[in-house]
Image (cartoon, rainbow, N blue to C red; front, side):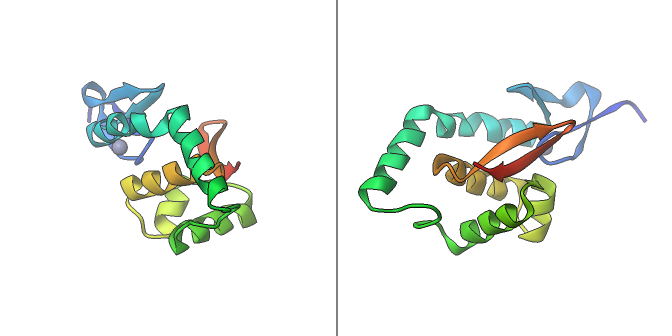
Length: 125
Ligand SMILES: [Zn+2]
């Protein structure tokens, strides 16, 4: 067995010569492609216009979210923090689905990522 690196997004083991680095994270090929296609989602203008949209429509907190997003948010709020793995398991989501949900909630300034030691947690904003 050659040395393996753990993908920091989906947790899969990737051979040492087959991993990618994106924003300081070691990722497998799938997650790397996924991360690169999502970069535009994280621009501050996107975040801002989403907030303006929500404000102009009188939406606050979890208003305007899907039931799934509300459930994820409530779950994290009740626990204070949760890992992606934990959420993927609990809500039966693929890592891509979970990232997409997280991206939306991050835009709404409900959740954010927080690094503690070697783990990245999702925490209330
Ligand atoms: Zn991966």
